[in-house]
Image 1 (cartoon, rainbow, N blue to C red):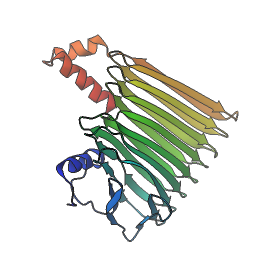
Image 2: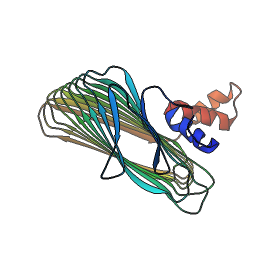
Image 3: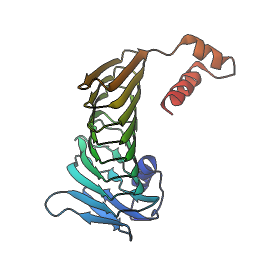
Image 4: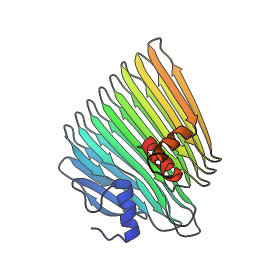
Length: 307
């Protein structure tokens, strides 16, 4: 294992589900520095020369490879903006595991702004997993991810974007442009509590004929936390787009969901669904009849909702 303390190892486990050196290509970033990097025959990981970040080049026809690029911040007051670009060759199948974990025990804010740009070739199949997690006794754990994707013809991308817990402030921007027969699925899950705030802006442009988008946002807001979601689909030709925003609101929290559908073609089929509400008392009572306390029943419902 690399030279990580126990806190950093826990952060790594939370955001990337690894406890050692992974197989395949990787880049580990801790407090602004790369502490480990590896390329493979099919995947080349290179540091940028003009700004902070990496370029990941995936050869055409690469099959079922995995790239890990987690980021850890354990030094209070550390602030960074990181730019990562992914160039994915035609006919490739790859999983990219990102994520950022912050531990803050000081008086200063710790901030990670990550800008990820994906250039996806033709006939590709890409899964991108990004988890965010904050811990430590201090406030000021701030994560602002930007994810931009360009999908070429007949490519498929699945995004799993998850904020596990402990992030005090996040401003999330996700944008995608799809060409002919391309398809994207975006699944975003957020949990806020205390005084935390979360903003998420997702925009998908269906630029090519028969392109498809499915966006699902699920969130839980507790205490006096605030969430603001904007979901925007633009259909420029014969295409299909669907977005769904579901939120559980608790205590004195606030949730705003703003859908936007922009059909620029008679053949664009765009649908949006949204629901914000509290946990039904009948659900809690049902679980309590099985021996759970009200607190345990509530936690079970939330876990199932965000699963």
